[in-house]
Length: 148
Image (cartoon, rainbow, N blue to C red; front, side, top):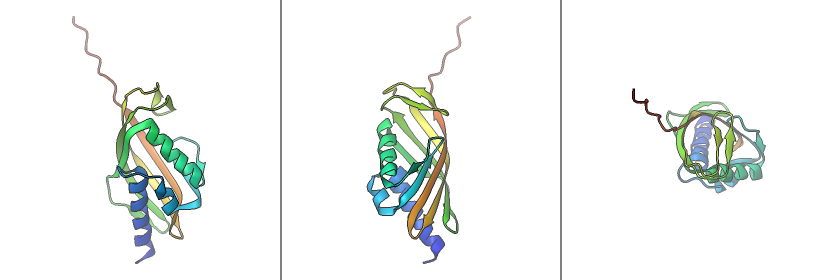
């Protein structure tokens, strides 16, 4: 199997195990480099497997049913694998503040839809970097037009 094909397979497993419906912190132990760099949206980078697992637990605790799916074929260029993702979830966790989403009070029940890109750097069969950038859309109740 070519290196590009192997990297694409690793990326597909990572995306399903990290962002998919069957997400599990074990994916970090299975596929992440010891010193993985994880960057999500505009948040500070996380370094190392423990921090990656902590992020995974926190984001899934904050957003019930959060999952992303690939919306296009993965593209590979050497050690880099690129993908387009879309996802959704419901905010049921602690107070959440994000520059793009705004302020969500604890257990707000807000449905969020996300779309973006992910770039993975795969080295020696391990995910060395995972950078995901998303745009958030929060469902807001529509305000009706006042009667005249």
